[in-house]
Length: 195
Image (cartoon, rainbow, N blue to C red; front, top):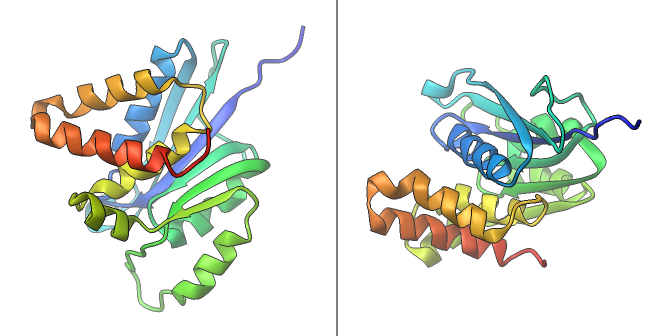
């Protein structure tokens, strides 16, 4: 009998960007797709804009741990480019990196952005998104995270209908306009990566 293949997703960013919200949406979408999924999270200094990351593991059989070893993640979703570099070693060689280009410098001596972007573009399977421009285009300043999730959705075994249901449920308490804007951002990101 072969061992169950456990897939892993790492989400990273800084406090206030919605890393943990995206992880919860991802977790729910995987579960609704009939997969076994677990999540772990590290808040760090999330209240002050410090590093935050979460890990989501999933498989078609029950799993016992949500932790991903270095070099074993199938997907890295990063809402901040320097945070992407911090966790890029978690990716397997055939993995995908979906990352926002816009920095949120939270420290002195933040490295030159051109150097960070060059390093990220050198990663096989990298997809960078100008979330700032997209937010302006959609007239939704918090579109970045949902757009990145939309891009990442192309690499996950979840049907589009399930994503839309989970996102709508997540934002329904905030009203139809907020729900629509988040679905629009998700669709925009999803449209940037071929099926």
